[in-house]
Figure 1 (spheres, rainbow, N blue to C red):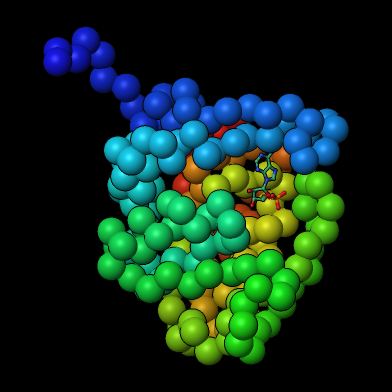
Figure 2 (cartoon, helix red, strand yellow):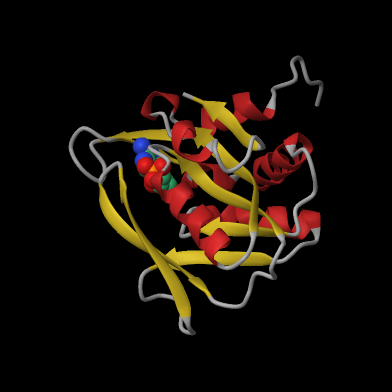
Length: 181
Ligand code: AMP
């Protein structure tokens, strides 16, 4: 097939993301990334694109439940580094540390298994969407509580109008988003 134009990852991603109005609450425009997963090549390209924008290779990637898990595993695999899940309260079976925060539509508690992050590890935090920044900040606080260094954040989408960067830019300047709305 002759390609008449080359689409960037951001352009293909933008075309794949579905806007769902009033989910999970009235007034929220939900950025549904599940259609992205139908295109394995796009998923692979997203992970490659994020990695190409990182200033340094991290020692581990910390992924946030649940939509951070999908591309997060690709990042860990391509970088050949450990993956550390941060999950909602009550999901991780062993001893955990927890952090409670407010988000765009409610409040939540996130947890991390104790003793998984080695002291001094440079940890990249990944989630699908940066909205108000509360979730990413909670993950960062959990990484710090476990002795890790927050070395970077990587998102597929940033909702710039919610000013999430303000909550996380004090941790690191290495913050990557493929698309900002
Ligand atoms: P926040 O803590 O406000 O930055 O919210 C980020 C988290 O909530 C991420 O885990 C997202 O998956 C989810 N999220 C928040 N707002 C949206 C939105 N408008 N569309 C899709 N996901 C969202």
